[in-house]
Length: 116
Image 1 (cartoon, rainbow, N blue to C red):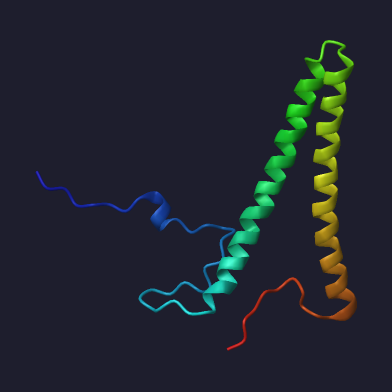
Image 2 (image 1 turned 90 degrees about the horizontal axis):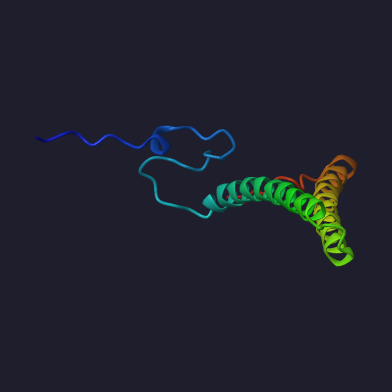
């Protein structure tokens, strides 16, 4: 028996964080598509950075709990937690620096655009 093909949910769902401004039906890809590519990549990378921080913090906590008083394992756990915290601080500092530059100079450094 023949059944019509239904699109998958991912094909019909509008993603809330993904920039679809450059996506048009039936048009040829242009250099302007790099704006969307950069925007979407940055959106995904910030999410991945947050998840990496969270999982490194959890892993460091478990290492610390299960170290059993061993100084080497406890030092390794502290190192993992410190690395996670430094990564988070660097990520937030980079975002803040870019926003301060934009506020003080008026230059849109947080927007990636290709002029036509």
